[in-house]
Amino acid sequence: MRPELTSPTARRTWVMTRHTLVLLVRDPGTPLAYTVMSLVLLSVLHPVYDRLATPGIPGIVQAAPGIAVMFTLLALDVAGQLLLSERTWHTWDRLRSGPASPSTILAGKALPLVTLFLAQQTVLFLFAATAFGFPLTAGTWRVPLLALLWAACVTSCGLALGVHARTQGQLAAASDIGALTITCLSGCLVPLTVLPHWVSTVAPATPGYWALHGFQAAVTGDTRAYAHSAAVIAAITATALVVSARGIRR
Image (cartoon, rainbow, N blue to C red):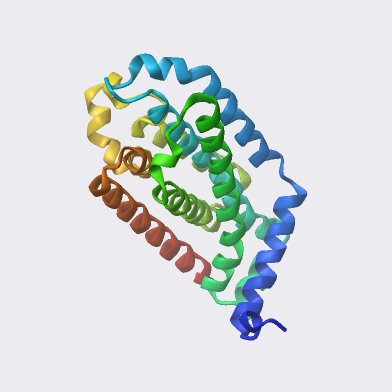
């Protein structure tokens, strides 16, 4: 047996991770659809962003991060569904009463999701760099790190929804309305400069705002703004994980 799997916690985490990965591989339709839709939307809208861009900054610097954040948020229901399905299959109580701790359950569900969302962002950014000149190499290590943090943030928020949602309808409503609201208020779909003034006021209250500005800061070299954005995203992730763990205990 491999050394990293000798502890009971590691074995339980690995078993749950493998099970979650199998579920995602068997039904890849939704993540695949979101990935393709993001590429199509970027191809269609990037000329609009060029017209709305701040002088001196290419429109693709706004378009690519904004659409990446938007379609990752739309995948919130994918994360929530993994926990809600346990209720549908009548395995939720057995899972909670078993030897696995809430942190083990969350880790087993989260690891494949983080990988999935990270891959979704990677495809979009590589496409944007190849087709429209997105300065991906200028971000060096900052873009991959923020993509990982954002993937973890969306995963943790989706799991929190899955823990507390009681029905498919509740999960769909919360994830879809939440994703659309955050997308609009954060400036991911339309730049804040062309939106009503009050939107700019409330935008920092949304996680999408910090993800968008973090990606932009990563490629423009604004290290202070990047560090601030990364710290806020990490804090939101930790809060959502705490909410999820408490919900599992209950």
